[in-house]
Length: 42
Image (tube, rainbow, N blue to C red; front, side, top):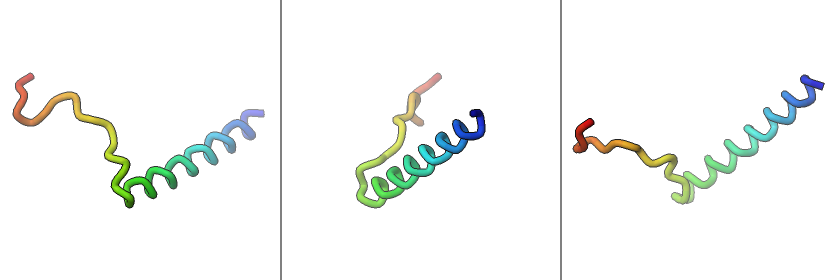
């Protein structure tokens, strides 16, 4: 059962990665926003 679960997770990740790449090409996906900016002090 663990092998089947791993295969399903790999397929999900592969499909997700393809979708993200297509969105980046179209300019719709920009990724996660940064918590701190360069001009912000910690």
